[in-house]
Length: 150
Ligand code: DQA
Image (tube, helix red, strand yellow):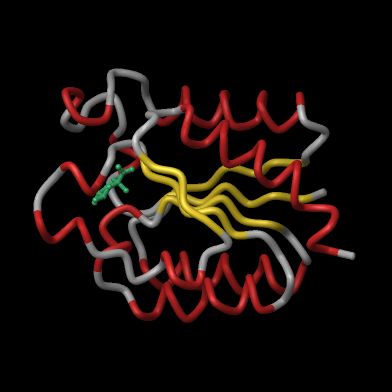
C-alpha cells in the first residue's frame, strides 16, 4: 500500500520555526519518523514537502493516478486554498484515504486557523499531537486503506 505523506509551506523549517508551537525536532526527523512508522505498518510511505501550491496540487493528482493514499499537512493552505481542496477531493472521490494532519491544534490558536477548507473533503482529521499526529494518521491509513481501495 503506497502512501504519500505530503507537507505544505514552511514545514521544511521544522525545528527552526516557532519551536514553542511546533517542537524542536527537524523536518529531517519527520521524514525518518514517517518512513519508520510506514515500514512498521507495512506501508510504502514517501515523505515530501513543498512551499508551492502548484507542486502540492500536482502531488495530489499523482496520488489519484497512482492509487496512493495521502497523509496531508496542508499547513497554511489549510485555511484558504480552494485549489488544494479541489485536488484533495479527487483523492477521496477516487476511494483513497486522505487524512488531514496538523502538529498543533488549530482550534486553540488564532481565529483564522479555525477554518479548514480541506476538512470537508478529507476522510478525517488528526490535529494537536505533534509528530504523533502523523503516526496516528498512518494507523488510520493502515486500518482503512485496504478496505477503501477494494
Ligand atoms: C499547521 C497549522 C497551520 O495553521 C499552520 O499554518 C502551519 C502548520 C500545523 O501542523 O499545526 O503551517 O498545519
